[in-house]
Length: 183
Image (tube, rainbow, N blue to C red):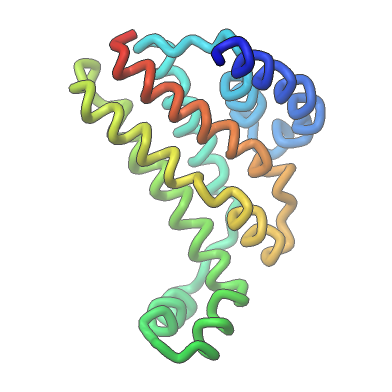
């Protein structure tokens, strides 16, 4: 099973690395993050995981700088529309640019917050580290939604590195397993 996993990661690296060269133009951390996420020999020791998390933190901060944001009025509208049971309002909400901006901002703010927790102390409890790595993976669980939100905002998912978030999610899960193995 491990041999197949490493072969798949190598294949993904060969396919995605050239296609994501454009991501490094807008987000410098994207290229290195892609490399770590898909490289079969990625270092998942405590030191390697710390480097991966710091790089993911930088990536999320860089994405946040590029994302358009809602005004306070738009955020209030998204919040109020989200508390209804009226399906017409809900459909209008999820189809809106305001909702897309809100969701992308929430996803990358959450990434920033969780990576900050993981970066802090050197002597994290194993359970705490695993829980936060899995939480990060879950945060990127909807990479197709992330791409859809970006397209509604006329942003290029590939240029932002969104098309490799599935690999990042996978690498986060592998990192959590290696943490449990106490590597």
